Amino acid sequence: MGDLTWWDGVDDQARAWLIAHNGEAVAPDVLDQIVAAGGDLTTDAWWVGQTGPEGVHLSDEATDWIETVANEE
Image 1: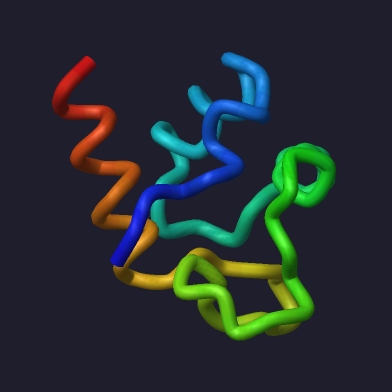
Image 2 (image 1 turned 180 degrees about the vertical axis):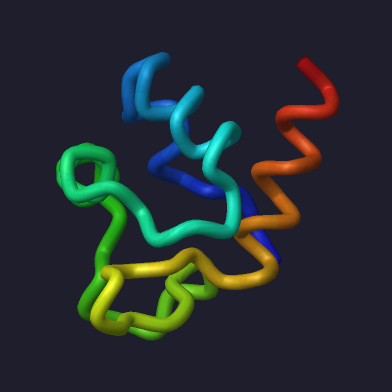
């Protein structure tokens, strides 16, 4: 597991959403920010989890990373 390289490229509101909704499908507007910040959904990036009818989920590792960041704030 590495750092979420796109984390610093999303705004505070998106980070707050990701912390508050950790483990849920990523909201489309937040996902747009992640992609704009360099988050590549077309690769086997470690932070990409399952994609389904609800949308894109982050991987368990990314969810844990976000939880760690939230606990340090």
